[in-house]
Length: 320
Image (cartoon, rainbow, N blue to C red; front, side):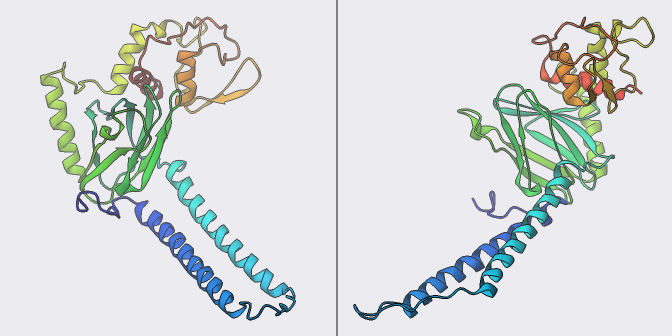
């Protein structure tokens, strides 16, 4: 059992060693001060025990140096832990490398659905290359889930109505456990899988082999189209192109090169066009109207799935 689920999983990502060092530091400090307090309590209980019924305890005088010592040292240790942890947190969740491989993830009761940029899909298994950052854009179709990869020391909640992101870089090939770390229903314990880290050349071979299978059996769960291609097709099926066209005839703003930019709303506020804003504009288009345009767009709530929204976003991101 312990070989399958070791108490301390292997360090298989660039974050793993940093997280472990902080964990060991906090554990060491906690054990040291816990043991110190325990021993001092015993020592003082013996030394200052009451020796007779008539004994009057000696008055205790304060010590400024002692009080400063037991205030400053814990303060410095707490600030060290905070700064150390904050540095890892921001690197893990906010400083995504620009060359990261984009993979979309959808959690649902009770499976993980992954789709690679070139269209390959997987259920509860994720193939990734080593030595390259991987960015996961995650959504859920039902309740809260939480993607947890112990060997990579990463975990992130997947919340209804929001997109969350997570990135990591695998350092060594291997197969690692993947879990849902948020209780999501009766079969929550079965919502697990594997992350298979491969050498870059082997990863490319795997992509090619899965792509060949998709072309041979396009009705399989393995998709033949990339998210961008599927999003482009859906964009036209939903007639989005009839309004979001460039030029004065467009009833909606042009989407070319808009991703990542800031747009001004009719309220005078500005908002950055990211995954969350596009999703909101698809499902609740009147929530944030772009300045100069009328609230004419209908909602697509119930007409598109989370996966299709991700495909539309992938297509809009590709418009340059």
